[in-house]
Length: 253
Image (tube, rainbow, N blue to C red; front, top):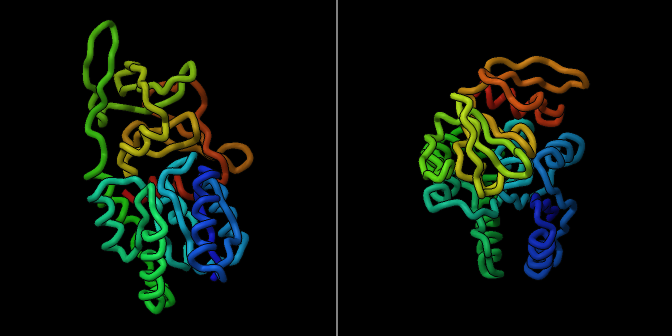
């Protein structure tokens, strides 16, 4: 059995590989990938494995974006810290999961499920990832953010946020009314609280709201130039590795 691990934390990836080797000595971990871009490039250029272990929150976005760019023809086990409702959505679509931190027993049970459903996976009856996003996004997304400014606490409705970005090394909210608020959460944490249908992580510095996008233009070197309904501190560009996922996200409303 050939296995690929998609995990942006090297320590976690090594730990998982070690457990896999202990439980399935004949299995071979053929690649350790750390980002959405790495995964899309790998699956485009290489033969698909027999099984994938995939973290949900990667450094450049949610791993569900991978499925929007390439067709995965093997079973996937998600490694995640998502809430109970999201787990139910994943399980209902025939994909198992490992809740971090997981044990050797958890991994053994995951392999048992893969064995039980081997015929199902061989028929390429893969889950509908768009449906999975719909089920996770609206129910798990944060409705507002608590902010502090001018010695006062207030809440900013998520639907009124145009984008999140890094300003002076701090994650910052920019509203559709061009109001700014600094947050004390990381961009990864913020992204995990947002609807994957409504917000897209353009790069490490920006997460944009669909409602804030005015138009998208082709740019040099197969990149995309995203224009918003309000000014942004810098030009918002999407690398060629992410253009397909972004355009699919725009289309699948």
